Every structure is written in C-alpha cells, then in structure tokens.
Length: 164
Image (cartoon, rainbow, N blue to C red):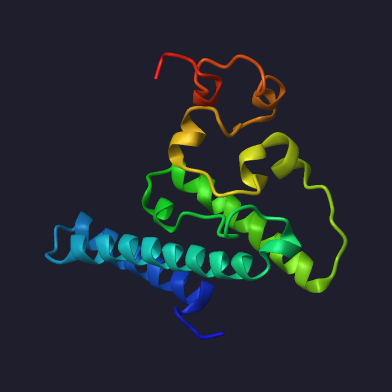
C-alpha cells in the first residue's frame, strides 16, 4: 500500500510535541501558543480520520470473508471529529475490525470476543450504522440492551411507534 501519514508513532509524537510546547506557551500567555495547541488537536483528529479511512479500505477488500454487510466499510471517518466519549465508539470499532481483518489474513479461526460481542454489541455490529440508529436504540450499546432489543422499545423507530 501507499503511505498516507507519519504512522502511529509519528502521529502521536507530533501530537504530544504540540501539546507539550503549546500548553506552556498558553499558560505563559505567549502569542502563538493557542495555535500550536489547537494544531496538535487538529493533527490528531485528521490522522484518526485517515486511519479510519484506511481501515475501511481493508474491510472493504475482505468484506465477504469477514461476513460484513453492505459495502464492507464499517466506520464513519468523520466520527473522529465527535467529542469524547462519542469518538470512542468509532475508535473501538476500528480496533475490533482491524483485529478481525488481521485474524482473517493470518487464517486464524474465529474466536469469541466477549467484550465486543457480548458486553458492548455495538462494537461488533457487522454493518455500518448511523448516529441516529445508535442513539435511538436500533443498535444495542450494552449487553442489558440486547435482551429486550426485539421487544417493545420506545426509542426504536422500527417498531412503528408514534413518538417520532
């Protein structure tokens, strides 16, 4: 493949450098400190978006082997720009699907990931879902939401409820 960033260490070192230089400049009220600090945050967000794009390319290539729905792209790149903890949603999915991709490439047998598949089912959801689906309960966040997922859920649009 082609190189599109500075890699994990290059991305992280540039971010840390920006924070370690920018924060003291801001505290000392030195002009340019805010720019350095904000540039570090923008650098990290753009690098994350690029990482998610690259993971999407990999999962798209092996969509059928991995058993993914749709076009195989599991992540919304722009979710990296969401404030914490929402950016954690796409981050956890990125880790899960990247590890699944490499499991398939290595030819390892499927293994149960109890945290992703049982405790946090949104992580292992084999389709790309929207923020709306996540927030309205169409994709269960936690294990206790899975049990009643097919029952009457006032926030689930798919059950023809009139609240929406």
